[in-house]
Structures are given as structure tokens and as C-alpha cells.
Amino acid sequence: MGLKAMGGGAGESRVEKLKSSMSRSKMKLWMIRATTSVLLWTCVVQLTALGDMWGPRVLKGWPSCFSQESSVNNAISVPSVPPLVLPPKRVYKNNGYLMVSCNGGLNQMRAAICDMVAIARYLNVTLIVPELDKTSFWADPSEFRDIFNVDHFITSLRDEVRILKELPPRLKRRVELGRVYSMPPISWSDISYYRDQILPLIQKYKVVHLNRTDARLANNGQPLEIQKLRCRVNFSALRFTSQIEELGRRVIKLLRQNGHFLVLHLRYEMDMLAFSGCTQGCNNEEVEELTRMRYAYPWWKEKIINSELKRKDGLCPLTPEETALTLRSLEIDPSFQIYIAAGEIYGGERRMASLAKAYPKLVRKETLLESTDLRFFQNHSSQMAALDYLVSRESDIFVPTYDGNMAKVVEGHRRFLGFKKTILLDRKQLVNLIDQYNIGSLTWDEFSSAVKKTHADRMGRPSKRVVIPDRPKEEDYFYANPEECLLPSDESLSST
Image (tube, rainbow, N blue to C red; front, side, top):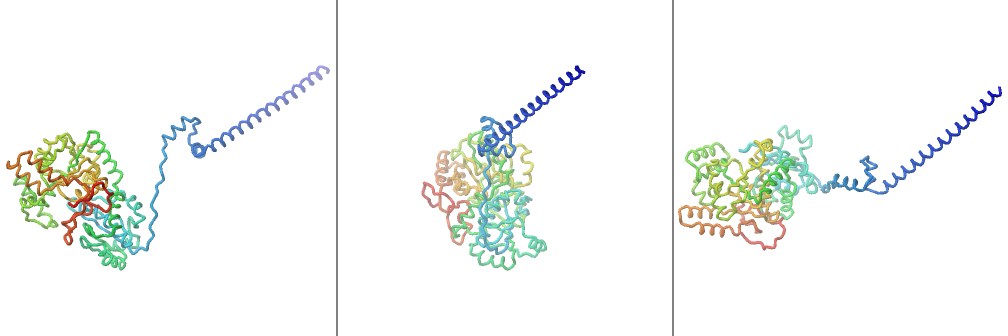
């Protein structure tokens, strides 16, 4: 019994000790947990207090790398993107809706879009995103959004004019049923024509459709704010799609890697020759083919054309052979890359032989890029022209062989970018000098000297637009020399 009592007492003592030990262990565990919690909360508070650099990472669940070096690396790898700042919307009483269908090639339509934005702004109407020409000779099915960044176009101009992608449903249905007033505005009209003649029609019918837009706003005599808005649309609001812009940057980079480059806008495609009737250097079969083509298209009204007389008057594009002589006479470095901004040259390699011999580094977008790069551009002449536009704009020298719409619009854009060198060929003087050289009346040195003298003041420097009242087709084009929008130059303006 005594042993049991002793054993029982010892057991009770051990139980008490065990209980006491467990109590102390729980107390230590609680103290550790409490201390850890305090430390963690202190860390959180301290990290949050560090501000923008650490706080957002803790709160947003970013990887919280607890070293200064890592935080710097993260800051570099995740650059901040500035928020897009849109201009405030212009608030005005809407007088109605203006629909426009552009006609012609890319750059003719580009200028027309600029005009229509300015007109819509002046009339306080809502402009519907312009429709592009799909029925011309080129038959390009591209929509506005396929060539231009439509969202940038709309938002960048919202402080001037309201632009919608389509009409409101009720009016859209009315147009689909054919109940819309459609008309071509008068060419080269003053802005007052649109105020006095077009605005009342818009107010009456709510929607007016202008079905032709080429050269429908006068070059000169317009309010300064109208001229500046035409420039703003052209140089800022009309951006090409990201796909076109990216491909353009790639072409320019490839060219820059190999040194300087000159863009030659060589207007010697089949349609150009058929339309103009210029057949210098063509054989009899080619002359007949071009003539048949001219007669096949009813909108080419001039059918009987004297090619030689037209050439003598400087109204024909230079041939590839004439172009080679001209570039050589101007002492363009033979090592320059010559980028051909044009469609397929009529006559192919046979007609390009003399130019290729004088300038071996002839390139085109088709030779610089893989066929897969251009697969989405095939049969889309306006998108191909957009690519050539970007390269032409950025070239060291730009030389158009004919004063078409692309030549003029690119010339104006290069003036806006700081009067980049653009050689404006005097074709009437050139063909006369070339003919004298070819028959031996001039030596090479005499010929070269005369060509350089003729073009000394035709390099795209500051000048005043030539104004010819009542003959707008013969005066300088606004988009070739938008002088109202150009920064003052150290050189004084001179008359051309």
C-alpha cells in the first residue's frame, strides 16, 4: 500500500511537471507568434510607407523583391506608359451629317479627306468616316480602316469636329433605302460656296452625300484656320495602320543600314502612259497597246494625243532613260541606293537597263522584303502606295519624274518636316537639253552644267505658292506647298 501510495504520488508529481512544461511551451509559442506578427506588420507598414516604388507592388501582388538591385531591374523591365491624353470634345450645335465618297488614288483621296474635315468643321456638321474609291482603274477594295488608323483619326480631331464611323441607325436606314441627297460639289470652290450652297441642303435633308471630292476646295484665299486645319489632318490625324507603319519602318531601316538612299517616284506604269498618251521610247506594238487601253476606259476623255508635242511641253513623265541622264547630270552619287516608288515599270528590264547601269543599287519594296511580308498588300494598290509614301517621306532625296498627286503631297510633307531635299524636275527644260545632248549639240559637261543651273532653285526650299486667279489647275497646289503651316526658315521666301 505504501509503495502504491508512493508510486501514485510520484505519478501525480510528474503529471504536474508535464502540465507546467506544456503551459510554458504554449506561452513561448504564443510569444513567438505574437513577435512574428508584430515584425511582419512592421515590415508591411514600412514597405507601404516607402511610397510608389514599393507600395503598389505589395498592394497589387507584384513580385516583392526585397533588394534595391532587383527593384531597379524591375523598374527598367516594366517601363511606365504615359496615359493617353485626348483633346477635349468641341461642343457645338450639329447642323446635320456629311457623307463623302472619295475618288482617285491614295494621295488624291488623302488631300480630299483633309478638305472634307475642314469643310465639316466650318459648317458645324458631323462627318461620317469617308468612303474610299473602289471603282477606279486600280479597283482597290480597301476601306478607310484598312489604310488609315481610324480611331486616331476620330479622337485626334474631336476638339474640332465630330466624326462617326457610321450614321445613327434611323438615318442609316434611310440612306440604305436610297433616300439621300447626293451631289458632286463644284471643283476649286471657296469655303463660302459650302456655307451658302451646301449647308442649307444639309439643314434641309439632315444628310448630304458628296460623291466626288477631288480638288473641291480652293488652294488660296481661304481663312487661315481652314488652311491650318487642312495641314493638321494631313500631317497629324491621318496615320496609316500599325501594320503599314511597321512595314514602312522596316523598309527604311533596311535602307539606312546600307547608307544614303534616294527615292525615285518613277511614273512609268502602263496606266500612266495610256492616260497621258506619252509613248517616247515605246515600240509600235507598245504604242498600239497603250492606245487600246486609253480607248477602253470612257472616263479618260482625251483620246487623240500627240505624244511628241506633249513631251516638248513638259507634260509627259520622264522615261527611265531620260531619268538616268538627269540623275547623272545632277551628280547624284552612283553609290546611292535608288528606291523605286512605283508600280510595275512598262517595258520591264529593257527600259530600266540604262538606269540600272548608272545606279547598280536599284531596289524596290519587293526586293527588300519577303513575299510573305507583302502578301496582305497584293491587289491593294493604295496600301502599296502608302508604303511607298512612308519611304519617300523619310528619304535623303526625293525625285518625282512627274507631278502627280503623290509627288505633290510628298513634296508638301517633306517641306513640313524641315524642307527636306526634293528635286522638282523642270521637264520642259530637261527634254530640250536631253535632245540637244543626244544629237551632239551639247557636250556632257555643257549638258550637266545646264541641268544643274536649271534646278539650282528647285530643291524644295521655302517659296511662295504661285497664285493664278481663275485658273486654279495651273497654280501651285496647296498640299505641295502649305506655306501657312510651315515654320519660318532662315532663308527668305522667294517667288518661284
